[in-house]
Length: 366
Image 1 (cartoon, one colour):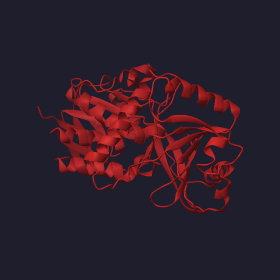
Image 2 (image 1 turned 90 degrees about the horizontal axis):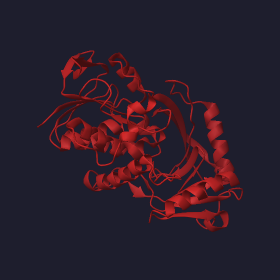
Image 3 (image 1 turned 180 degrees about the vertical axis):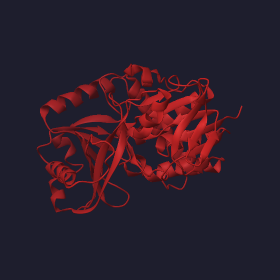
């Protein structure tokens, strides 16, 4: 049976949901007050790296690995000409001190016992041949051979275009309410009127809590501002992506070296700041001293939806019947976007998601 589904939010979670539902023949209307990928999904780095934690049964890890598989599938189905710049890009998580080295080594040992993925611990001497410009103060690093990178704006836009090609429609209006009668959603309303729907997916990022509050649904998702710098750096380009603490450095398809990022709890203020610029540059130069001679080309900021435990919320059991919540990807929004979209679309039609998502229900915060 074909359903009429309203999706609120034109980021990667909303557009991925639109793609999977429209592909399967459902009537989809995407509501976005600005434009597709105009917020966090359009400004992220786009690194797709498998998480390595101390437990291989971690649901977040399983969900992430499934989403990486979906990224590869999407590259074949909606990106045959390579518009999204999806490519394999080895990455390395750096340890700047012995404490961090012990943590990464412990996670690596736990993971390597149960996985055939190309993940290795390298001392500074072992990875210096990859790029000798890494500061000798770096203790070591966890090398991920099976990591990827994508242009997040182009990926989100491609997902929407594929959905549109399957009949989905875009409404450039702000949703002022999700409508419900008798404990069941009936559609959404904008300032231009009401739009009936059998189901509604709330994928409005950090704005989801405001959208759902009138329904009596309390969603602990808040904005986490992140700022990124794009540098014209001395050649050669970085051959891999480097990550340490909250920060990273990677040379993208535009030829610029992207460095970041901040984690700022400042509400919905998405302005760039000099303080963030100086902090990001200082951290990057500490790890890659040659960047001291780089020129700043652009500084951006975006608001990522974050939950208290930094895991997403994908749930259909909270609120009126027909409501699905899909938000909270945080700094892993691009990595998790396809899996969040697929799971939300499964919940809409009443199908069990491919990967168990019980750990991502809203009830965990009760």
